[in-house]
Length: 621
Image 1 (tube, helix red, strand yellow):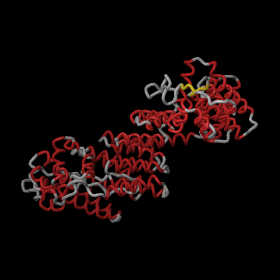
Image 2 (spheres, rainbow, N blue to C red):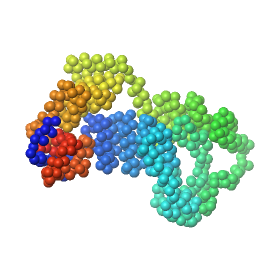
Image 3 (cartoon, rainbow, N blue to C red):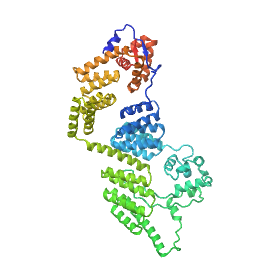
Image 4 (cartoon, one colour):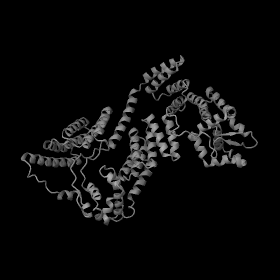
């Protein structure tokens, strides 16, 4: 190591002028999200900047960089995982959950995706869902420490008694944090919960449940209790593919709010139904009366079918739903119930047909938009199981036109990513990749750099895991002065084949041009470790050492600052400068030379100092 030899020959430790140690940063700071050249940066570079911002506590900036990484490469699960962490750190658990689901959808075998999902659900106080997410992760990765810790944390918090008086009595328990989190997801209750006056009264009830009868004199509180206790039944949402929840129940109109006591508010739904008066049909014509009676009978048949469904007696359930349809053919809910059974039976063609029929009936008889959207969403899931992603995406879009739903939007995003990935895989062909590579070689020999780049890029799409093709593409990109793109391709080539000596040499050459001398030095070293006699690596190493030792003397001050600022964007350099031990050693060079000289005897410290010198962060005089 020429730099090490030069430093060891000095009688006294070198003094350092810092173009940017800790007490004196460079004039040009590392680029931020606003100053980044997005057109030339890769997804990985955006991710690296996002990581640095997140470590610095700049969550909004981190989210911006991760979003740019996703826009550049939406098929990389890591970017969604990182952005989920940033959202959670910012306190936005809903978006954190959405990104965690996208991460799992892209790569189910990635353990951190389940940790992200569990943490987001934990933050939303959805303890049971959080536990389920962690347990799903543990079923696949039983030894993952992060998932185990997350599961322990959420179980511990779930089992803790509620603070203050919120846990005392049925009335206080109605407004537990977990219940409030669930209520906030209901679009009917959300406006009420956003009312500061209502939230103040809820807090009073949490502290003293005996105040509930008094609070119910407020019409808004009465409306909230009515929605909690007498809301319309809804179809449970399909969360998983194979375990479809029980089929939906028809929508009913909630009872009009009336004054209730605390005891009335806590009655079970069953008792409430028993007290409902019978509908007076005496004023109806015989035809109208028969329609009403058939509708009631259809609901009873549907309820019988639901019980059979829960008992996994699917054929009997289908028969009951058919009876309900015969009694009330205008109600799309019974058709949706049949579709749910078919989905559970994995009869996806029948499920899709029944969903489409349900929507048709629903549109004809003006069924709620929400019910029609759910039918389209179930059809999308059935198409997904059939690997017909294009049709699945179409069904999701139809569902969103009927009724926008966040779960459906997440499913749509996952399907689009799956399709993008599937299309890329379908496009791959080793034979066609070799043909494109040969075309690129011909153009390269003829010094036709543009066509060479196009041919090599086509070859990469056909064979994305071929390191040699990426090395060729990197060489062609260098010819058109796109060094950032060239470096990106060579880094991917080395990820595919870490023992590719020619790629290490090219990486070093690119880093030399980009004035990243500390990185070039490392690249050449790694190449020589694999092949000590490699001419390109040996010559490149000699050039970079000479540049480090003597080349800076030929630089102008502005060039030195530019080099230092560029190096400061490197996470490895940032880590060295943020190390308290290294900070003290750098300080000792000016205040306590003997201590600094002693520290330089440590190979690890010496290597870090030499890296800072090579990067242009500090320089010898």
